Length: 434
Image: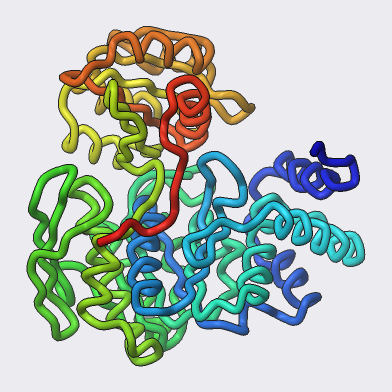
């Protein structure tokens, strides 16, 4: 049955907030939370920042917690197909009914307070209130951008984490790894343990300094915990050592050797949570790691021809793909604020051919700009995603699979087209049987 105008009015309001862009700061979110009695303080939280791997790390941690019998809420961004994917409890997205109610609730509060929140601030407020209404045992919260002035940074977490530091969002966070590390270290809280992944020599001293100022205990990769990746790209395994345990042959549910880094981060966070959540045991960790699922991350969405999708949206993410895959048909679209030239340079050696296109929406880099960014790299260019996929599907084969990457927005549009025309799988956030 078609929706009435009244039913869609909250969604229209939410969409209108996108035009306000990025506005870093905590004033709006604090006001929104204060107006509804601070629901974000009614449950324990885990707060995760970093350039890449935040969503995958939280997917592993959520699967561990759910396996241990705890109800975990998860707030991530951006979404692949629908905004409800940003809000998960028990690995299930928010319902449309809850979305409409949440938007209307905070639209009224914002009007009463005389403020105009950004799109992400509204998302954050909805997540925090929804988790309380869903009676979660714990909420896993992903930073939107940076950390220090991100609207998620009003939580009082049990554990913090910084997955890694690389060059992204430089117009907001600074153009050096040290500057970016300073912003992301802004999530560290006095006395709250923090897990730090592989951040590099330039970033780690900054994080250590900020942790020392806050007296936040750090658990750093290759110092306090470590891992060894094994298995294959499609069936990775990991050995983990840290925080008093040493475990071998941990099977991972997400593809790619790079997922061992995210899984090790999740295991370390899980171990730090055991005092509050005592059912986090070795069997729960093993089963959780092996059953984790996170759509759009080196995910096989079609079998014939093989089609893979990855939301890599910066050079570091593309480097991971270049190491994981060999000869592929590559369909590449990217947001206009990204370092497309570097990303294309990294992907070109595995691309046979490289196909450039634009996704729908104002954030996409135009095909003319993409052609310029490609430089001397040979590429086929298409104005629309549908045209790019039509050509790519004709070229793809068992020996030369199709890879769709460059942007989660482009991946989402491509996923929708492939679902409608070729029967590609729909995104699933539910853990798979171990």
